[in-house]
Length: 304
Image (cartoon, rainbow, N blue to C red; front, side, top):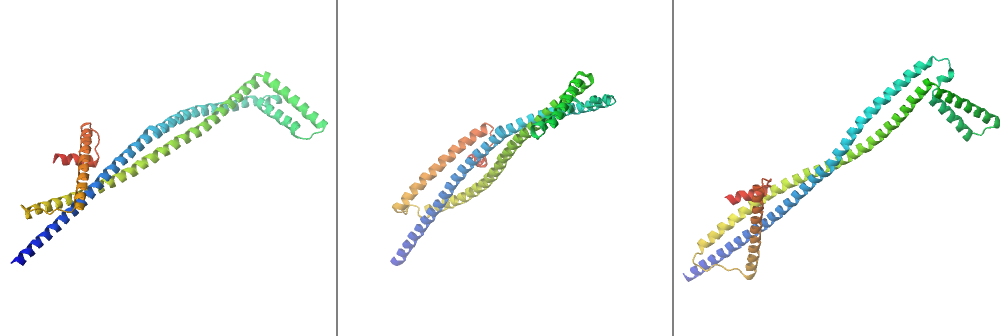
């Protein structure tokens, strides 16, 4: 009888010890998952900050710059159309003027002032660049004088003077058109550069949102697992109380006590953090701001 009683006591102690180990194991797993929950929350907050920063850079920096240069390009394109129309009209006016003057018997009038100037420039270039004997050089000089006289005579002619004015206008418009095309290329490049950078920021936002969704899923799964461990922990605690009600409970060693105290502190920190997060979430909800998944969950749990 005494042996049977001792055996029962020993079995009882062993069962209690095993139960305490199970309780301690569940508590440790639960606390580790709670610590992971804290890390998930911190990571989510960091990602939300990154998303906000990328959106701000995309919209307030690159989009504004792109729109600015796009507006400049649109204005310049309108100006280009205006100058191109003017250029075409001047070319047509020159052709009509030349047709009217073509019937003139004076061969000197058949050349425009611009053509005369070009011939003079070519002859002067020959004197400067070619090795000529004195006779050839004098012949060219005489030709230059003849052309200069033709130019002077043309300038004094109302018809030629009109053609000269048209040609000068064409040159000015052509110069302005070239400048417009050059400026259009520069401004279009600036617009495209800022557009590309804006798209890079939006692509980064999409990637961060994907990371955020994955973290939220992991957070939910982690929370569910932690809740399961906590429920099992509570069941074993209740079982322990029922089995050994009125008896001196099993006291773990100093090492277990230290670990217990450490975990208790961690739990208190986590609870404090959750309380602060809940207060922040309630303030955001009151202000009409968008809540993240964890904040919404905190509010729902607090109502339960």
